[in-house]
Image 1 (cartoon, one colour):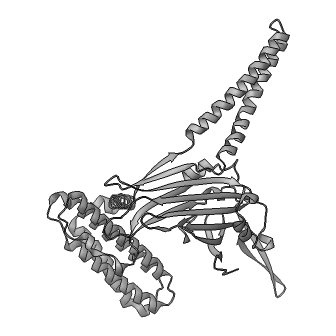
Image 2 (spheres, one colour):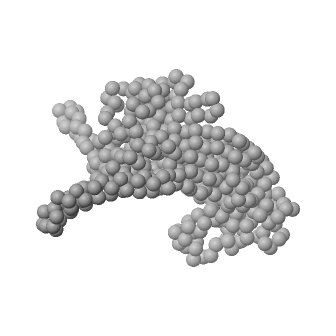
Length: 455
């Protein structure tokens, strides 16, 4: 469920069915030595800059042999129907090729690797042929088809080039590698024949990459749901701030009136007292407001996402978000018990950060052929690495009366417990996230609610 995304981020991808409800809780144990707390990293700052949430239509079968080709058949409906069906097909092909390429790169045996790579090549060729078989005749639809064909051809070529670059190399498999190279060349030549991209764009790596990112966003239209963000407590926060200001001002006025009654004339002492009173007001007003505000919003959701179909504008799902620093004693006892199973050396003084999302699907049915919503929650740990120490240490060895040294990097560990609640079922998992200043080194599943231990 949880996997690494980029160097300093990870994603969680649960599935949601029709009229379903799902709650996800994440409890982070952040060592104090990392320097992350409410003063250095506020909840609002993390939410606005380091957290992302997406919902998209999804079919359970996202591997290349199982991608459904009927979405690109000639559509007799409206223009938007053709575009949406085309986008759904291309989006599924992209997900499938990404998933299969990642799985293939995990294969270490060259024989098995190139056999699987050859199968992927044949399947990709078949999917591209199916797409091109249904070239629309209506000029209004040609642009949609051209964008999809251009992007899908380029994306598949890039995926196989990555496969060739990162896969095992051996002279025994020269024919297999040559077949993959020829496939990439044929797709490149096809795009040139269709004149999909100008020469100036092809010569500039930045321009062609940015163009394909734009085409990717175009094919996601109608597939990835539009998200609207609402801050739930904005009016309540204004009310609290106004109330605190009113109470403090009333107290200040009482003190001022008493001071005026004592000093019948304006003197330097009176001016000094009034200045001191106003200074104290400014000092304590913010602190009092912050304390009262944290007490009021503790345990309350802070944000709400509303997901709508970008074509029909129908509301599909909504999501409530919680994010707050907490104390260990406020964490549910089941989660505390899981954290307590850590080894003694891992029980360091830590800050506790709680994230929760509660998602409710309002739609009674999805688009034809799609049986679920694919949710992506992306968490960046970049702000967690901000205060980590740079540089490497040295480990010395004594070998045959000679001293040798080896460079070692400084690493830190986060512990996280994931709780997934669906109906009456709960899933508990604990992960150990090892990271340094530049990347996540490893994400390891340590405990699962089935009692399995891997530590």
